[in-house]
Each structure stands twice: as C-alpha cells, then as structure tokens.
Image (cartoon, rainbow, N blue to C red; front, side, top):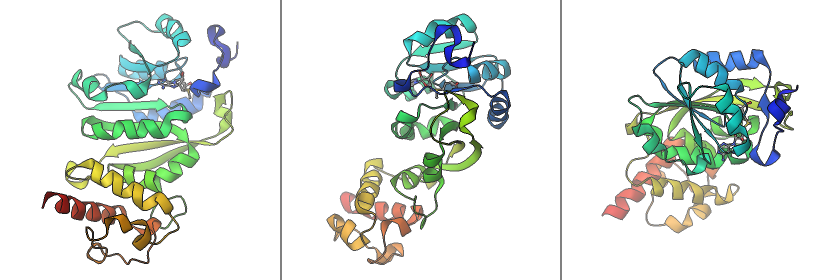
Length: 269
Ligand code: SAM
C-alpha cells in the first residue's frame, strides 16, 4: 500500500496533503528538531503520522492539530491518547495563547505545513512569539527564501521584514519533491525560527509597524518618498539613515523599526 492511500486515505489537494515518505528525510528533520520528553511539542498537520511517529518516539507525548476529519480515526488508531493529544481544528482558528497556557514550558511548534495556508499561519503565530521556544517548518522553498532574504535581494519584502522583526531564522535543509507522496510541483525546505528577545522586536502597538511595512511594500519599485507619502510629517527618513530616493527593498529591518518608533512617538505626543 502506498503512503498516499494508507488505510484507504487518499491525499486531498485542498488540504495541501503531500505526505512525507522518505525515512532518511524524516530522520534528518527529527535530528534538526531534537524533541525531548517533557517539551511542549505541537505538530501542525500530522497527516498520516509520518513525523508524528518519530516525534512521539522521541518525546513520549505531543499535541497535534489536524483539520481533515478523515485522518482522525487513522491517527487515533495509531497513537494512544497518552501519546497524542489530538486537536481536530483548522489551525488558523486555534487560540495559541490559550494552548500555551496549558504547558509549563514554551511551545515548540513543528510541521510539514499545508503550503496553501503557510503565510496566514506564520502571521497567526506572530502575536504569540513570546510563548514560543522555536518553530521548525517544512515550507515551499520559495517561501523560505523570502523569509530569510536580506535587504537588496529581489525576494526581500513584507514577509521578510515582518518575520525577521520577530525571529532569527535559518534555512536548515532543502527537501526534494520526491520525498513526498504525492510529489509537490515545487521544491521544499525546512526553516528554523527562534523568537528574538522582546527588546529587539517591535515595541508599542504592533499594528503601527505592520501598517508601515505593508504601506512601504505596496509599490516595491517606487521610491520611499512616494510609497511612504501618507506618513509625511510623521516620519524623518534622514533620521533613520535613509534617503527619500531609496526603495522599500533597500531598507533594513532595523530601519523599519526606527521609522515605526518615530510613528509611535507621533501618535503618543
Ligand atoms: N505531517 C504529514 C507528513 O509530513 O506526511 C502531513 C503533511 S501535509 C503537507 C499537511 C497536513 O496539514 C495534512 O495532514 C492536512 O490535512 C493538514 N491541514 C491542512 N490544512 C490544515 C489546517 N487549516 N489546519 C490544520 N491542519 C491542516
């Protein structure tokens, strides 16, 4: 029986189901995560249990969030309730702050993510960065490249700035399409994410920073004096070490943070 039809279950495209079936790749991923007993390990999208089995073997007990109702009996048959605490839900509706309250240690969130929800999920997890030890995700390689991109790179954009303002990130491993059943049309990669100390992250109202970055990248080829025109009189580009003729993709995360600080001071004065 092929892994894509384990216990009669067929991979569903709408749930982004590409199941890992390469034992070597699974071993590599687990050695990157290094799960240990007593840790608060949360797996997103356990699927048929390819990673779950190795996570449970190493940690003894984990929590997993799965949307596909058809996979629940399979997972319940494969793992004892003491090994797998299964949350049957759309991960985008899960209250991670409440989930973190159930554990005495910070969350270790892992998963071979459904690629169709990867960006909304990364944003859903931003507000609980304080409650997280680390995140290790399999994503589309192109998304990982955007996450870790440096200023000046063609793929440096809103996702890079928003995430780099909250996490140190590293592309850990590239995974070929053949490691999955069915094989996705895109290459994949594992990214590690470690929340930055609070003092290094956006201070005050996080919406100010988020709105500024969205506005800056609303037209990435335009100069800052045009793209940031709505903030005229509230921000001083020179004070942040910038020229009005520079483009949003040339601005470092630290400079975006400095501009957001200026805006925050404006709105409080
Ligand atoms: N972890 C398994 C593996 O590596 O073989 C499955 C990975 S598969 C790429 C993604 C998994 O996420 C599927 O099991 C899918 O049903 C589940 N999923 C898709 N959308 C989801 C959502 N919104 N919330 C929770 N799980 C979801």
